[in-house]
Image 1 (cartoon, rainbow, N blue to C red):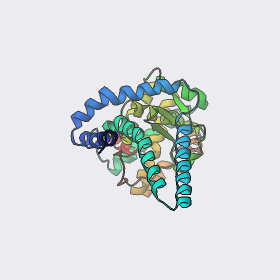
Image 2: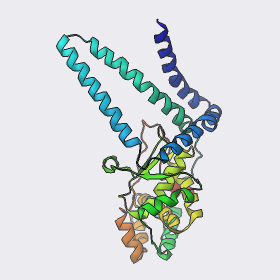
Image 3: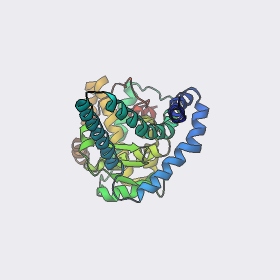
Image 4: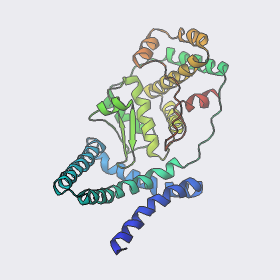
Length: 308
């Protein structure tokens, strides 16, 4: 084995060993998160925040385009020479190019994903109905007046108690619509992205939720709970947006458990709330946990937290 091959094997082994070490030792993962992951992601965030458009989008397109161009070029050469050596060379080049990306992702995100998640109590039907009633009562009394997306994104960092941070609107939100994502945190660029074309009442809570990932929270349920607390402290449209999201989760669960109670509860929504609720898509049905996922927990953990 040559010196170059040894260095490549060492660089490949580092992320491969780092991820299991984080999963096996939560204390090691916590130390790595505080000492390396969070500072690195925040440094990248400060760097990319100076750029007015999401860096992650053109970067993903560039990497995809380069990989496809190199593959087609290698396949063409292999067909002409009737030899597989060009394809082997392309695979080696792809591995070398992907290694920094995989290594950075492991460094930034594996410690966050390995953090233990606090257990959220399961709620019974009675508590769930009471939670829906409380959320509907608060929203019926709220003005439900939301500023435009630029103003919401400008105020999101203050609401999240993360001064100096920024939330960006996706330049090409079509990919978010296809993936059914309201927002996304990109560890490799430190960017918090949202789909600004989503209904405006949902945007404040979504923006704060994505910033919670920047603070080192990987679990979606834990990020929802953290965002709820920040939004309620901020008040105004951020609190209304948080209650609206929580109501959508709670009503979705109630509908699955007791449809009669769900119908009675839904009739308590008054004019403005009923219109906003319908415009935002209504209930969110409970999702089955994905078996293959780096992120544990689910968004609806917020319901158990509030009802419990």
